[in-house]
Image (cartoon, rainbow, N blue to C red; front, side, top):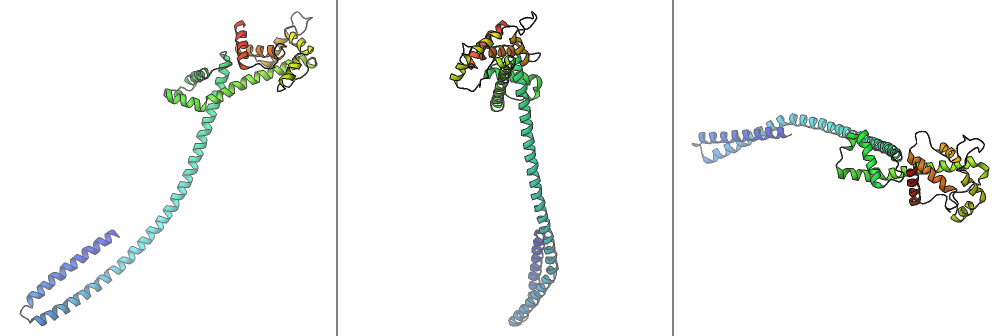
Length: 295
């Protein structure tokens, strides 16, 4: 349309210039005629030329306008098609981005879960049963620097602390608690399995008064003493009951920290001097520390 308008304007100017130039020439040739005849002639001539120009314009632009309309129609159709394709592309792109985000989150979650699982085991291996936040963070840093160096060293100090706090610490703390809980459960099961009917069962979630009453029973006291006696008193090579409990709970290659924790549990569950089946965290930490020194 723009090129069409330019052509139209150019043609218009040429025609106007031509008409003006023609009028001047005819005016010079008719100076000897009377004013009235000259006036009529100029008017008639001007009207005739204008009519011819209008006809010429009409004939020239009718087919051109028709072609332009056809081209515009085709362009509009193409625009509609492109618009639909763009919408489809946007929809597909949105789906792809959504899938990529889900995949990225999935990979991130899987990576962090793997880190947490391995670090929780390492903490116990290095005799840290009740790690502080700094100890947890340091353990993760050590693990990543050796196993995922390119990932770890991309962080600045501040960014790493933020990432650790937001993504790892809470999960790691829960995992360490889970490991301790698993050792506690296995220890209780092993004790009740070995003593069998000699030891009446007790719910670990029972009220404190019920637990205290259970611990005052003679059978519980006898089983507590029995932990440090041989499994078979007639066999001089027989291991003590406590060793059998440990054997049921821990696998080969266990750490001293794991052993100390199991010893702390066994010395607590049946101990008549403690009204609780499981002691509080600070007391258990002291017991574990005490056993670690003697191991």
